[in-house]
Length: 235
Image (cartoon, rainbow, N blue to C red; front, side):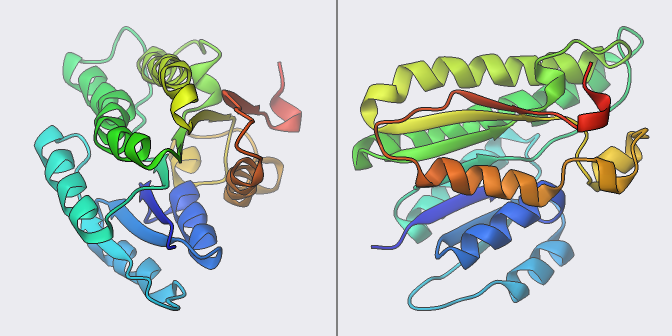
Protein backbone atom coordinates (compact mmCIF):
# COMPACT_ATOMS: atom_id res chain seq x y z
CA UNK A 1 0.00 0.00 0.00
CA UNK A 2 1.33 3.43 -0.91
CA UNK A 3 2.15 5.92 1.82
CA UNK A 4 1.50 9.63 1.36
CA UNK A 5 3.42 12.54 2.88
CA UNK A 6 2.40 16.20 2.81
CA UNK A 7 5.26 18.69 3.12
CA UNK A 8 4.70 22.43 3.48
CA UNK A 9 7.44 24.89 2.62
CA UNK A 10 8.75 22.17 0.33
CA UNK A 11 10.57 24.26 -2.26
CA UNK A 12 13.72 25.04 -0.27
CA UNK A 13 15.70 24.49 2.92
CA UNK A 14 14.42 21.94 5.41
CA UNK A 15 11.24 21.24 3.47
CA UNK A 16 13.09 20.50 0.26
CA UNK A 17 15.51 18.13 1.99
CA UNK A 18 12.75 16.27 3.83
CA UNK A 19 10.58 16.03 0.71
CA UNK A 20 13.42 14.64 -1.40
CA UNK A 21 14.38 12.17 1.31
CA UNK A 22 10.83 10.87 1.78
CA UNK A 23 10.45 10.48 -1.98
CA UNK A 24 13.61 8.37 -2.05
CA UNK A 25 12.14 6.35 0.82
CA UNK A 26 9.11 5.49 -1.31
CA UNK A 27 6.52 8.05 -0.23
CA UNK A 28 4.07 9.64 -2.62
CA UNK A 29 4.25 13.37 -1.98
CA UNK A 30 1.96 16.37 -1.88
CA UNK A 31 4.32 19.33 -2.08
CA UNK A 32 3.21 22.77 -0.91
CA UNK A 33 5.06 26.07 -1.35
CA UNK A 34 4.59 29.64 -2.57
CA UNK A 35 7.08 29.49 -5.45
CA UNK A 36 5.99 27.53 -8.51
CA UNK A 37 9.37 27.53 -10.25
CA UNK A 38 11.29 26.09 -7.29
CA UNK A 39 8.50 23.60 -6.62
CA UNK A 40 8.53 22.35 -10.21
CA UNK A 41 12.32 22.13 -10.14
CA UNK A 42 12.13 19.93 -7.04
CA UNK A 43 9.41 17.74 -8.56
CA UNK A 44 11.59 17.16 -11.61
CA UNK A 45 14.32 15.73 -9.39
CA UNK A 46 12.14 13.31 -7.43
CA UNK A 47 12.05 9.60 -8.18
CA UNK A 48 8.73 8.34 -9.52
CA UNK A 49 8.51 4.59 -9.40
CA UNK A 50 5.51 2.28 -9.41
CA UNK A 51 2.15 4.03 -9.18
CA UNK A 52 3.30 7.07 -7.22
CA UNK A 53 1.82 10.35 -8.43
CA UNK A 54 3.32 13.35 -6.64
CA UNK A 55 1.20 16.51 -6.61
CA UNK A 56 2.27 20.17 -6.52
CA UNK A 57 0.33 22.93 -4.80
CA UNK A 58 1.26 26.61 -5.01
CA UNK A 59 -0.23 28.07 -1.84
CA UNK A 60 0.10 31.13 0.38
CA UNK A 61 -0.26 29.41 3.76
CA UNK A 62 -1.27 32.69 5.42
CA UNK A 63 -4.63 32.27 3.59
CA UNK A 64 -6.97 29.90 5.48
CA UNK A 65 -9.30 29.48 2.49
CA UNK A 66 -6.36 28.46 0.29
CA UNK A 67 -5.28 25.86 2.86
CA UNK A 68 -8.77 24.38 3.05
CA UNK A 69 -9.06 24.15 -0.74
CA UNK A 70 -5.59 22.66 -1.03
CA UNK A 71 -6.22 19.96 1.56
CA UNK A 72 -9.50 19.05 -0.14
CA UNK A 73 -7.63 18.66 -3.43
CA UNK A 74 -4.81 16.65 -1.83
CA UNK A 75 -7.17 14.21 -0.12
CA UNK A 76 -9.18 13.77 -3.32
CA UNK A 77 -5.99 13.05 -5.29
CA UNK A 78 -4.05 10.89 -2.83
CA UNK A 79 -6.82 9.35 -0.74
CA UNK A 80 -4.85 9.17 2.51
CA UNK A 81 -2.25 10.96 4.66
CA UNK A 82 0.48 9.06 6.49
CA UNK A 83 2.88 11.89 7.22
CA UNK A 84 2.30 15.62 7.58
CA UNK A 85 5.36 17.87 7.81
CA UNK A 86 4.36 21.38 8.87
CA UNK A 87 7.53 23.15 7.83
CA UNK A 88 6.50 26.44 6.16
CA UNK A 89 7.63 29.37 8.26
CA UNK A 90 8.08 33.14 8.33
CA UNK A 91 10.52 35.29 10.25
CA UNK A 92 10.62 39.00 10.93
CA UNK A 93 13.05 40.28 13.55
CA UNK A 94 11.63 42.34 16.38
CA UNK A 95 9.75 42.32 19.62
CA UNK A 96 7.39 44.98 20.89
CA UNK A 97 8.36 47.31 18.03
CA UNK A 98 6.77 45.01 15.45
CA UNK A 99 3.69 46.31 13.73
CA UNK A 100 0.43 44.48 14.35
CA UNK A 101 0.48 43.34 10.71
CA UNK A 102 4.00 41.89 11.00
CA UNK A 103 3.10 40.06 14.22
CA UNK A 104 -0.14 38.71 12.79
CA UNK A 105 1.58 37.50 9.61
CA UNK A 106 4.01 35.37 11.61
CA UNK A 107 1.17 33.96 13.69
CA UNK A 108 -0.78 33.10 10.53
CA UNK A 109 2.15 31.29 8.88
CA UNK A 110 3.86 29.75 11.91
CA UNK A 111 0.86 28.81 14.04
CA UNK A 112 -2.52 29.13 12.32
CA UNK A 113 -1.40 27.34 9.15
CA UNK A 114 -0.07 24.24 10.98
CA UNK A 115 -3.33 24.18 12.97
CA UNK A 116 -5.38 24.19 9.77
CA UNK A 117 -3.28 21.52 8.07
CA UNK A 118 -3.65 19.31 11.16
CA UNK A 119 -7.36 20.06 11.34
CA UNK A 120 -7.74 18.60 7.84
CA UNK A 121 -5.25 15.73 8.15
CA UNK A 122 -5.88 14.36 11.63
CA UNK A 123 -9.42 13.03 11.01
CA UNK A 124 -8.06 11.11 8.01
CA UNK A 125 -5.19 9.70 10.07
CA UNK A 126 -7.61 8.79 12.86
CA UNK A 127 -9.83 6.88 10.43
CA UNK A 128 -6.73 5.06 9.13
CA UNK A 129 -5.59 4.30 12.68
CA UNK A 130 -2.10 5.63 11.95
CA UNK A 131 -0.12 8.70 10.97
CA UNK A 132 2.71 10.96 12.05
CA UNK A 133 2.69 14.77 12.25
CA UNK A 134 5.97 16.69 12.37
CA UNK A 135 5.68 20.32 13.41
CA UNK A 136 8.95 22.06 12.57
CA UNK A 137 9.19 24.69 15.29
CA UNK A 138 12.48 26.19 16.47
CA UNK A 139 14.75 26.49 19.46
CA UNK A 140 12.97 29.87 19.64
CA UNK A 141 9.92 27.82 20.65
CA UNK A 142 11.79 26.80 23.80
CA UNK A 143 13.88 29.91 24.63
CA UNK A 144 12.53 33.46 24.70
CA UNK A 145 15.32 35.26 22.83
CA UNK A 146 15.50 39.03 23.31
CA UNK A 147 14.65 41.02 20.21
CA UNK A 148 12.64 38.26 18.55
CA UNK A 149 9.41 38.36 20.55
CA UNK A 150 7.08 37.97 17.59
CA UNK A 151 8.82 34.94 16.15
CA UNK A 152 9.30 33.44 19.61
CA UNK A 153 5.59 33.83 20.37
CA UNK A 154 4.60 32.07 17.17
CA UNK A 155 6.97 29.15 17.78
CA UNK A 156 6.11 28.81 21.49
CA UNK A 157 2.51 28.62 20.35
CA UNK A 158 3.32 25.89 17.84
CA UNK A 159 5.18 23.83 20.44
CA UNK A 160 2.25 24.15 22.86
CA UNK A 161 -0.31 23.27 20.19
CA UNK A 162 1.81 20.31 19.14
CA UNK A 163 2.00 18.97 22.70
CA UNK A 164 -1.75 19.27 23.16
CA UNK A 165 -2.46 17.40 19.90
CA UNK A 166 0.24 14.87 20.81
CA UNK A 167 -1.65 13.99 24.00
CA UNK A 168 -5.10 14.10 22.42
CA UNK A 169 -4.34 11.69 19.56
CA UNK A 170 -1.77 9.34 21.13
CA UNK A 171 -4.33 6.58 21.67
CA UNK A 172 -5.67 6.94 18.12
CA UNK A 173 -2.47 5.55 16.60
CA UNK A 174 -1.15 8.98 15.67
CA UNK A 175 2.26 10.35 16.63
CA UNK A 176 2.86 14.09 16.84
CA UNK A 177 6.39 15.47 17.22
CA UNK A 178 7.64 19.05 17.47
CA UNK A 179 11.13 19.44 16.04
CA UNK A 180 12.94 22.43 17.53
CA UNK A 181 16.26 23.12 15.77
CA UNK A 182 18.64 25.95 16.50
CA UNK A 183 20.42 27.77 13.67
CA UNK A 184 19.94 25.68 10.53
CA UNK A 185 21.85 26.19 7.29
CA UNK A 186 19.02 27.67 5.23
CA UNK A 187 18.19 30.87 3.40
CA UNK A 188 16.07 31.98 6.38
CA UNK A 189 19.10 31.69 8.68
CA UNK A 190 21.17 33.76 6.28
CA UNK A 191 18.46 36.41 6.01
CA UNK A 192 18.20 36.40 9.82
CA UNK A 193 21.94 37.23 10.03
CA UNK A 194 23.06 34.07 11.79
CA UNK A 195 26.41 34.51 13.58
CA UNK A 196 27.52 31.01 12.62
CA UNK A 197 29.23 29.85 9.41
CA UNK A 198 27.36 27.20 7.43
CA UNK A 199 29.59 24.36 8.62
CA UNK A 200 28.76 25.08 12.28
CA UNK A 201 25.01 25.07 11.84
CA UNK A 202 22.51 22.23 11.88
CA UNK A 203 22.09 20.92 8.33
CA UNK A 204 18.72 20.29 6.63
CA UNK A 205 19.93 16.69 6.25
CA UNK A 206 20.03 16.45 10.06
CA UNK A 207 16.32 17.26 10.16
CA UNK A 208 15.63 14.65 7.47
CA UNK A 209 17.54 11.98 9.39
CA UNK A 210 15.61 12.91 12.54
CA UNK A 211 12.31 12.45 10.69
CA UNK A 212 13.51 9.12 9.29
CA UNK A 213 14.56 7.93 12.75
CA UNK A 214 11.18 8.82 14.23
CA UNK A 215 9.32 7.07 11.40
CA UNK A 216 11.33 3.89 12.02
CA UNK A 217 10.35 3.61 15.69
CA UNK A 218 7.85 0.95 16.70
CA UNK A 219 4.18 1.99 16.97
CA UNK A 220 4.37 1.72 20.77
CA UNK A 221 6.74 4.72 20.97
CA UNK A 222 5.83 8.43 21.07
CA UNK A 223 8.36 11.26 20.97
CA UNK A 224 6.77 14.57 21.93
CA UNK A 225 9.59 16.87 20.87
CA UNK A 226 13.18 16.91 19.69
CA UNK A 227 15.37 19.90 20.55
CA UNK A 228 18.45 20.26 18.36
CA UNK A 229 21.22 22.73 19.17
CA UNK A 230 24.33 23.95 17.40
CA UNK A 231 27.36 22.91 19.40
CA UNK A 232 28.90 26.38 19.50
CA UNK A 233 25.76 28.31 20.42
CA UNK A 234 24.48 26.27 23.38
CA UNK A 235 23.71 28.59 26.28
